[in-house]
Length: 458
Image (tube, one colour):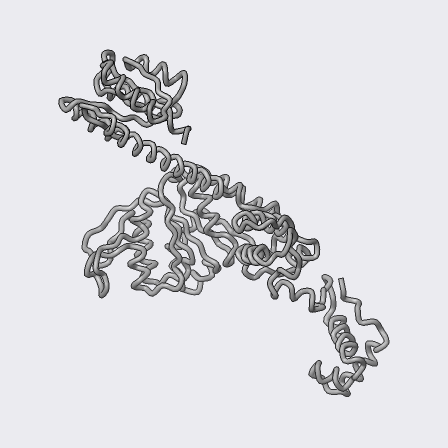
């Protein structure tokens, strides 16, 4: 942790200043000293440090004023106040204004080392958290949603237009298309990005449980409520709340949700008191919500409250040109995560991925690639490592139907292929097709049994 071992000691008292400098240097710190606030700021501007020890009172400035100046630097260090008992109030104020902590005189090497090592550990943890936040920002910004298809480019443009806004958003799309990822991307580029993103799936919850999850409850509100619990609105206060599968919400909950969005307040279950909340609201559904309104399943007034901005995510089958990009991304991710030297996907395996219908959309593709990486015996994923549902495309000769084919041509092809499959046995073919033998004979005379049975193959 050499990057955390640079310190500046600011004190006009030579004895105190030297004691701190010598103690830190003996523990491996690179230490500089200053005897005034002006000298300290000049030193920090020339060469930043990670930790500043400063007396609460200096000849040319108060310690609090120096703290404010330090916090205004581009990459401010952590600050520890050195104080006598008569100036302890100033040190307490300093901590409230952003100082890491304070230490009282008389100083001893043991106390200094104990405090300093705790400070270094806290610096390390803060930096790790900052790095994690940067990684989350990188992962969830819209530009990291993968897709070169026109459909996804439209989605990206919508997301870009939402940058810096706080309007309610409705995201529609089938299961597995990435609705929560899109919601996180919206949050990550909003004014609330430094506050919490809280997600709740409304599907599969009883009405009582959903109400408690949304609005919280007080102790004794119902059997088993042994303590008070905040709901997701309170957890997301100041940030973003994402409600998935909102179409599954019971009518009574729709009324309460509408009131919360309109009034900006909730009432926990079992409480007579309302609680103010301030959230950016994003909803999602895999159903056609306007149709649910027309069917009387979803409230029209709530629909217009949540559907200020609408984003529709396409099925993976409607953007097949994105499959190689997504598959390559998941391959790299899981190879690194699982520590397997898998480098690419074989051409025939990629062909199967491109031809598969992906009813589970991007989530199914992700699971497919994870499975393939786990099973891979070398650097290349082959068709053998793909799931049976995808691999089955190799075993069946499904008809490839050209646009504009007539029903007569389709029937002819089915009869001729079935007859070929039955090795010319007309009785067996008739049984397989569900036709009377006489009907089959008539159709064969019409179509000509000698014609080849491959006219529909692509």
